[in-house]
Image 1 (spheres, helix red, strand yellow):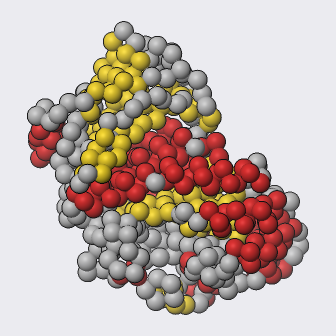
Image 2 (cartoon, helix red, strand yellow; image 1 turned 90 degrees about the vertical axis):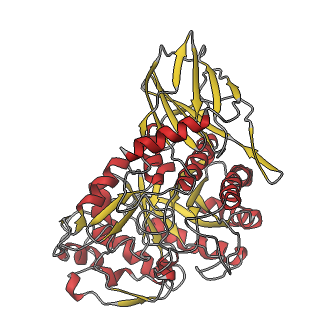
Image 3 (cartoon, rainbow, N blue to C red; image 1 turned 135 degrees about the horizontal axis):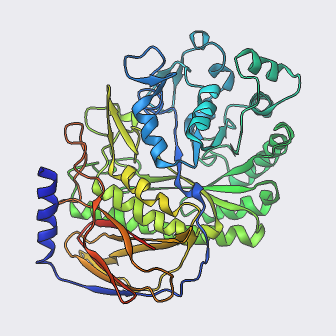
Length: 511
């Protein structure tokens, strides 16, 4: 009841705001298909992402299915996750796969030197990861240890996972309870090799990548999973250029990492996860839009050398200071309406440039950074970002239909950014229009001339919004921000009209 009153108050407030109208047109023609893999997830051995998040163990008092946390698993299933990256991140560069196979009681406990010096008991390893992918029905993305490992380590791990011949590794896998090979879809050869993955120069990493890439396919039982090179840190176009020039023919994809910070200071405060100001809100949305600058530039460089290579934005999202009172090395942060708006506008960018994108993986899935899910004991909440991903999964494998419009501006302290972001897609004869209004004060009125699309009317409409941009779901109030029916849209004489409240994300289904 209280949530309804808050939404009603928020909508009423917009009636007093300055109305703006934006005309949207389209020729109705498909430009490309939006790969489902754009909605990929990332699960690193970091903080409580794996343990307490995905995995609680078979003997836990928390409800589980063979050790996988039941409530979390069911929520992830609802997201239609297309691909899952594991075990890192930086953690992958100190991970040795043999520590995570065999009877769980016999696996060694080691120190996670990258993330808070937490003791890692390795009860979640190779079998647990690939079984999770099978149960979720998603593709597997394995990060290989290039930093402290060797080509032999990689080769033996790949044989263990995919092999069918009578080798020591396949024999060991069968002894550990898995007769048939696992399905391996992507191999990340190194992670942030310019940083935590070895502080390498691009020329050096290009040669190391060529070496690892060669043996990766030799030891994958002729399945040839997609080989992903460790790519650039945001605007480092030089790294991309050197890798494509020197090793492009040995890769299938190349990664890109980009995080948005409320205060862009990696060595100091990154800004609060909640209770933030409009300046910090504006900064996040503005810097999120910069993804639309760097992605096409990296794609342009890639296609200059290798037309077949795709770009994978396999780490992205908002990075704030950790939640006060938590282990700073565990990167636990709250998730607000601001973060949901960042997610929707970023996904719109990925949709636009999907012709050159192979995969994207938000960081991270549970209890870390811009998480889908937060847990506390036996409790679980779905974040605003989760609701965006679920609302937007209608775009997975759909045809992208370009839109033409001039967005009104959201201006703060003399600086302006687009107030509106949108995607139109078609799948199985159904159109979905998703629109985001990032302006925290003004509603936006849009009209879409639907003359060039075959749709008779609106069959469904939903909205995600709240009264304040720093609102968030809590364990006491888990449903403050979640999708609700949207009544502000109509279609008459082939024209769709909608009035978007401030700070809102709307999906309109047309048939």
